[in-house]
Image 1 (cartoon, rainbow, N blue to C red):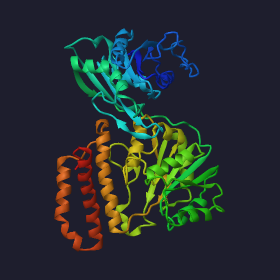
Image 2: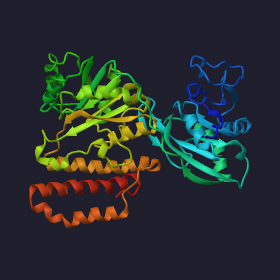
Image 3: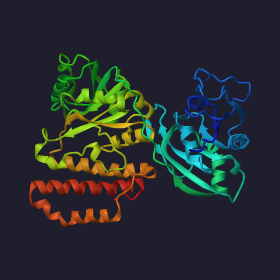
Image 4: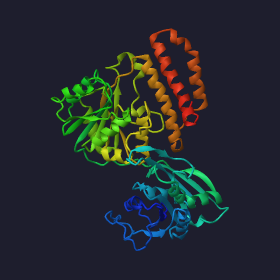
Length: 498
């Protein structure tokens, strides 16, 4: 029999006065907090918080009304440390006032603390003021982390305990929080890190989430496009032939096209009466266009495809059929129709991927809209590749289920022109280093030294392929551009991902 989960009190650092988002999220925890203490300039203990509309869990304490501790910006750190010591629960966790803890945050911390750990920390999902993702913080340090400490270790020195990393993104944190808020929230933990001997270990992998068990009410298909007038007609014709039964719409998101893309989309309206054109000309980037599509989507389930591919007739039906069992879904890519001469470049299915966690490719995926909103949408910091891996991995680490629908087939077009191919592979290499910098502490491993040496040695030994045949030249450029991207990305991110 497993040991019971230790109770955890929570201290909310809100030296600038905004504490409602954190408290609201605490009232929705699957494991209710033992207590809530808010350190804030909005002082009086008689304050009645406007949070009772978010009812406490039925099996939780009858009254989770916060206790307020007054502070000034200069005294906030000391007030948070004092509130932690005054907490009666064996563990105390810390949030920023504008944090949103995901529903399983306290339960995951408590599970990791069950054997008496001294410090338990998890990653945070960093979101901008517009609620879109800016990145993740998942490092051994306390900067950016959400954490809990064992209360009896506070104010002591020389004691030994475990320092446990929960490799999950369990808190949404605003990137525009002040330094005062951040320093106040990590005050008690910093003292513990300084005065105790903490031995590191990683918590067990997260359990697989359960699906929601229902079909979508309305599906929105989002197509980001920039100067796609030549290929978009074939994709729109394919969408007009879908076998999907049930309501759905198509959103052509124009990312600043200067050709006849809009005219092409308008001509498709007779066959796709629910088609809409969404303007996204403000800045280039597929992730930006997809985020604009999500914001405009009326459906509760959003599918993504590209303007230069062609959907199989059963594509959308297969994604919708998989929706009850997963939160984010990837489909299959088949290059045999649009790029038959490049059979050796066929993208691997999700079941054959070997990088860290499975991921749904951006050219063929779908997700529930509320999931996309919770995890912050597509990360616009990834340019030219890697954004689909990041989206899927964030979903995994936020506790969502990522599934695969093999029958959701998209006919995929590979790059034919060598300059375009080289640019694509170089961007993929750069994004690999970016992903490693973000996810290495969650288990994403770089290639070992032998593999790196073998890859670069192959590139040197096969340099004569550039003059032998078009097929060999193409293969060398693919590999060389990607390895060069690894180098460039490593220099940009300050990591060794070669």
